[in-house]
Every structure is written in C-alpha cells, then in structure tokens.
Image 1 (cartoon, rainbow, N blue to C red):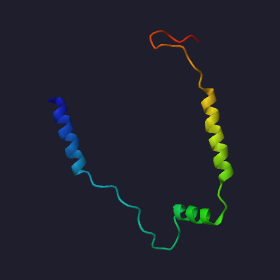
Image 2: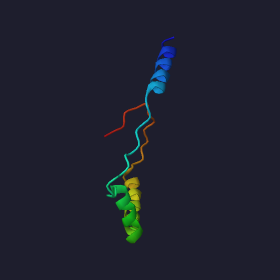
Image 3: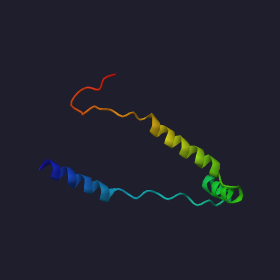
Length: 78
C-alpha cells in the first residue's frame, strides 16, 4: 500500500513538473563556448596523441587492481 502511494506521488510529480528550459538564443552575435570549441576543433589538428596517452593511462589503472583470494565470507588480510 505504501509503495503504491509512493509510486502515485512520483508519477504525479513527474507529470506536474515542467520540462527543462532550452538554452536561450544568442541575439548579439557572440558565439557560445560550445560553438567556439566546435569551430576550433575543425581548424586545429586532432589531439590523437592525447587520446592515446589517456588510453594508456586507463590501461595503467587496470594494473593497479590486485587479485584477491577473498571469498567474501572472511576479512581480507591487510
């Protein structure tokens, strides 16, 4: 019964809420940060080297993970 009321209130709140407002249009002709970033990405060479460095770092984080023989029922020795 309690879950039914909770679900009903949740649905009522979702239906009563207004949708998120969209970003206001730019009337003065200035580019937004996203527009500037997209324009710069088209002019400059891609950052493939930095993407590869980040990927290498993610693989490095995988090496930090140590295996454990803990079965979940006993404490892990420190």
